[in-house]
Amino acid sequence: MSQAAIEALLPEVAELIVSALNLDIAPAEIEADAPLFGDGLGLDSIDVLEIALVISKKYGIQLKSDNEDNVRIFSSLRALTAYIVSQRTQ
Image 1 (cartoon, rainbow, N blue to C red):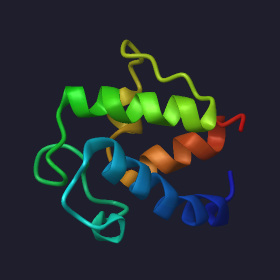
Image 2 (cartoon, helix red, strand yellow):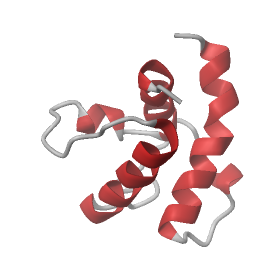
Image 3 (tube, rainbow, N blue to C red):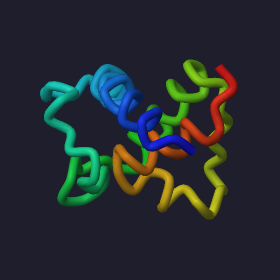
Image 4 (cartoon, helix red, strand yellow):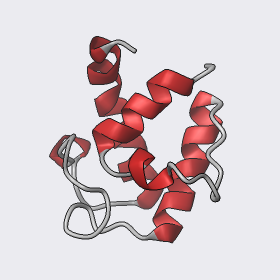
């Protein structure tokens, strides 16, 4: 998986997160390696469902709630973007 592809997609995924959750921050303010949960963006499980839904619609990726890799996939913006790049069909 190309690091350049991940870097190119980071702003788009950040925008998706901000718009899906109606966050009061600019997409550029989301640090690529900061945690999405807890001290980072402070997201919760409902937020993850919202994000998974928009990602599924936009990129054709099925994110299942019982996937044991979800903690890793949603650990940071960069991890989520890398997963999208590795899985996407659209």
